[in-house]
Length: 559
Ligand code: LMR
Ligand code: MN
Image (cartoon, rainbow, N blue to C red; front, side):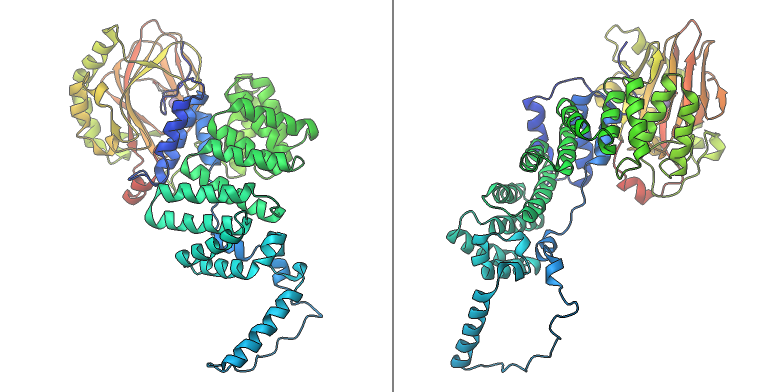
């Protein structure tokens, strides 16, 4: 029996390879037409290559994006505390004398002198950017501040020129290298250029690794650098960034956590585990590490006992980052699988109470912005898709015959469910459309069915669903589970329905009828059994949930 996995996309159990890294490098960021949304999809696909488990994949997708702060702002507010010293005892603010717009040479000179001597006198600690300025940079602070100002004004070319001037004097100036990197990053964005993005990353990386970088600047650089590396798809480089920081600050748990996330994003759960264990050795109550290690044990090792123990302990800390639907989902699932159903429903209730789930029974995690009608079972009349459903029902025998002919062929094409949803038994699927795209290869083998489906745009365009034949052999039990999203309604057309199979969605259990649709919302908990003696065949057709506005359908990232 294969591992689980029908509802989303295929995942193969492969070790990280050079090829996967290469693909990763190639597919990211500013490549034409592969912009932000694909970031999520590609990240998912790549992670999938390594992790075998869709849930982990989805976990990562959600976890990875880091808030991207406008960097120029960070630079200019780095030392905001000392720059806003206007407390008691500070000089009263006096209006300056009006300045002669055309000062004589002499005045100018004397002004300058005054300023210069002021500057010389200035102690480093009084400098508003002292926390990001090392000794050498302090000497070059005028140029650096000017460059930072230009950057803040988005005069990127001007800023780069000034940073380059500084770099000619000190090629290892951390502030100039970083400022230049940020300027290049803005240019990269304006020009949608990966080349420039690469240069931006190199410059920031050089800043990070320069000698004598103040701690505060290191912190700022590492955040921005890792975020840009991740955006570029260079997850291994992001990991190197956090590794560098972790080695430099061995007591800083935050860097270790970030390194863990990078490893997980790369699919390297071996390294992730090692760091998590390392954190837990020192602090066995670290919530972040408990939930993450528990999550890995549960989803990768399928160790439900130990996984649930750690997940529960982690969640109980209520630490930032532990209150997350993925941890609650998998904790409840782990409990269910070891027969602790009372604990399972307690966790689901709590998750719903915390707003992590739509309800105790509707536990999809990738939901529409719009509030949708949530109903486990639908009738055709409750949807706007009646005529499509009727058309497919009318042609059910044609569809059935094509499905059965596939089953006859030894070459198959049906793939085992690989999401670890089954307790036991043999359940396979043959996909015709997924993520709003036709599978041309498979459709060539069932041309009539695909021609019929081509007339059903609300299903074929559903980027958060699939259309597939599903064959379930006798002896199957599918654990209670929920689909990943509430954005679709799942219509099942009965094609070959012997005695024996049944499906529970929320609190109602039904079976299929040949030539008839049942319609479920698979974001509600459902469970399937087949206690009969012959195989069951259905066509699963995902439609957009009718309440989702067209505009939102277009912008939802595919699942
Ligand atoms: C499910 O969506 O989990 C199942 O109902 C699919 C199937 O083939 O019965
Ligand atoms: Mn399901």
